Length: 402
Image (cartoon, rainbow, N blue to C red):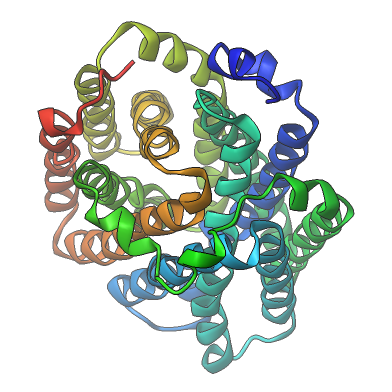
């Protein structure tokens, strides 16, 4: 936004009125459609072409998050030096090439490394896109990350539907659709490269000798935000990794269609819930929001564990899950937007990608628990849903939560 007054009072309409925010939001939407068009089906795909146990499948699908988390530390610092626009284009191009490769090969010895390499694209796209959106919104424009979350939710609704249709045709079609969408993102960002270059703020030349991501990890408040984010993503990762395997065991061949419907309903609700979530955020404290969100996750696991295939119970779980998601998932980005200096936003958002360690550990832990029994899995996950709450209640955060 162009003036401090407008930025401090910015709502959804004010932010969307900015052309750069609109372009970045559209990029986020298309990227999410492409990513979620294939990501929820990777576990099913590996179950079809390999004999790996659920925990091993979870390790490979979760490795995307692990590589993305580890690499984002460097990727965020490079973003602040080389420019967020350039790194964003490079990451989207890598996504395109990897998805195209997955569409052309079927041998597990090739498929498995390609899946792991998706994390390399993730480490480039995540910090650079978030930095550009934060800079476009300006000081006080935290709601831009609810807009981003809405685009992710919309992409998560549309992507699995397209992915399910493509998966029913062939495995190759699944990845070909995602490759085409990633290519559209590359073209969009390339067309707007000049305006993005003007927007970008880089680390001053005098400070380029340091790895600026270490500054974020020295910030006590940021460390609390990061710990809470890892715990939240560990729980959230179950929806995209282990829940499909649970549904596959319960529903057999109907699992891809059933999961696509469940995931699409959840994503549509995640989009719609951002308005009441923003309303609640203006009226309640951060710990109160976190408590409601953690309860939503726990109730969802209880519903799914007792569903016995009943659709209305599964959907009740989706309703509860989405309340937790709408409140908890954008929270770390909102707080980081406030904490990070403009020239180091790439490094801060890059360090925040360490939360993807939760996306790596979550599928492994969930797969192992599911192997040991359905009740073990759902009981432990319901309890872990509250793990982030004590961290977010810490007075050391120094935030009023509004």
